[in-house]
Image (tube, rainbow, N blue to C red):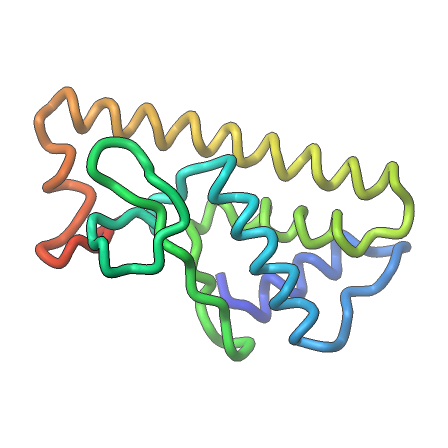
Length: 148
């Protein structure tokens, strides 16, 4: 999904509430915050690396690290996150922008549920690859970057 599509999705979630800021700097700050929170709650496969030269956010399973994701620059940039987690990013941004505390909590709860379900699938996949002895070769290329 592109950055522009993420903004459209977030605008849709905020119907009848505060509007998504027009200032891209504020939206990107929200994405940066959402990505940081996501790195604590989930393991996006696209952020996995074995390259210690990357800007690392935390350790992951095995010899993997969670790298700091790239922020989009223009609306046509593809988001640097697994596609299944884009709705969670939109929900996180909506939780930051929403007026009412109950609406903020609603979006936050749904984002956390999406991240938990995704993380359970990711962990099951990684455990299965480890059991098959294909853990490192399936998840990264020769440079240590994910191939998902």
